[in-house]
Length: 357
Ligand SMILES: [Zn+2]
Image (cartoon, rainbow, N blue to C red; front, side):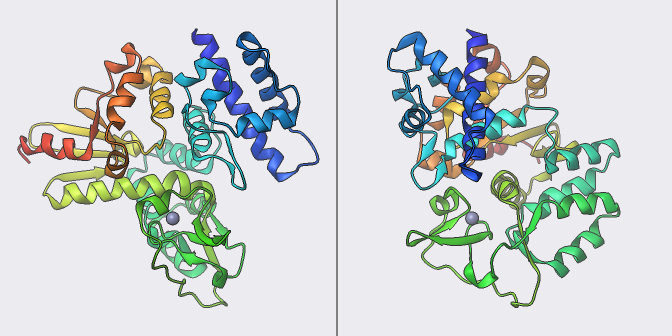
């Protein structure tokens, strides 16, 4: 059963990554997509005779909710109600979340954030790491002119190598700044498509903040403007906004909070008179993918969650889906449940009320 799940995860990974590559160049079918397709046919063949044996049939199937694909075990690792591909929009939010959770378990990940983390851990640069994560999680830095970016980094980071790595989290604005609007939620670039303004690929920001009043950026056309890369916007800035917001909320209540303590061992640490509480915030749309993320953790990774540590789900997710935590818990394997305690933000503040600051 376990091997089967592993192979299904690999199948999804190959399909999603393969489609992303294929979107860039439709003239050749990427090896990953081919491999994903073969695995897909293998798993369907076990239960069904209706096999999508060519690429067009495969794509057609992947546009349907995954419970309709004909692979019942998928329900353990992917949202049954979600497709992999959305018309006009490429891969879905859930597909992106799956890739992110799959890759975050990969110790050999070569992404720029991983490089920053490794660099800071090797040289024990706790303050520098905290500065970088906080800087990238601040909406006013999501789109920034070259001069201000260079100045902030020069003032706060001694290491030239580290400054260079932070620069790699940015890209020059692909179009003139007047083509964009400022996202009211995250500060990144909104683009106009099919009669609506969109922030990045999926529209997380729109579900959190109203887009009724949006403003232009106030840069000069002659400024060299940078924005966070799409990946950093999605995987550092958006969750970072939730982490920093919750940290500020606790801070206002008078608690002593440290963000990204011990170079990112946790997202937040609350120092109380008699004990320390550690928090990791998890901002996933899909409860299935979040549960599967925990189910994949090794024993040593799970051991990081001591008895005073909690997984916290941002309030807006609970507001949107009140049974969120219950659903995730119901999907956790018994061995994982012993380590993982999931709370809402409100439950954390309730729990803190009984404590001495
Ligand atoms: Zn946004």
